[in-house]
Length: 169
Image 1 (cartoon, one colour):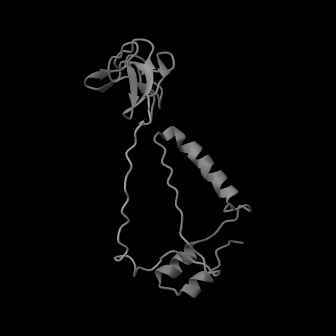
Image 2 (cartoon, one colour; image 1 turned 180 degrees about the vertical axis):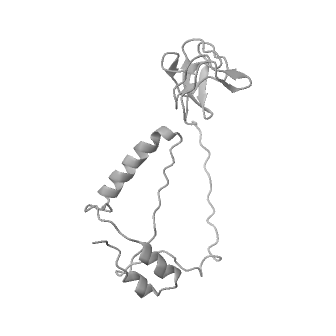
Image 3 (cartoon, rainbow, N blue to C red; image 1 turned 180 degrees about the horizontal axis):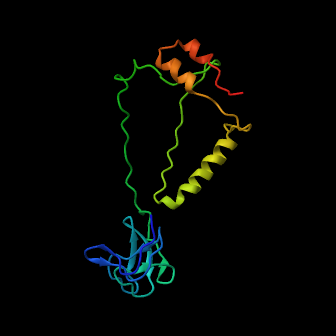
């Protein structure tokens, strides 16, 4: 991402009217006062001044706006017919079998920021979750996984792999 300069041609029919800093937005069409401003197909603002095609969008020329949403007054009831379990009744569970007889699965959370400027916030969330959930490496210890990877590649037994020392001294 880079800053864009006034008069820079973005594509044949769009020439910037002013400098636009990296990560900032510009209009791809002329907007009149009161026109909705869309980003990724969603209303995010309303023009409070006339905005020319190629002009930077900022708090000086738009105000925050969202589309109205109404919950339908009459919601039709849906009848749910449970599927037949015959096809899956002989399947096996591929999760984690615990010593106490309980089972579990691995939970993966995917957090995908829609704009790059949120990456730092995602890293902060990750750091705080890891620490709060007890998975942080409090000692800042380093682990060497090369030996573990080599044993796995060479077909090492499960016992041999599990006994591999990972902690570097």
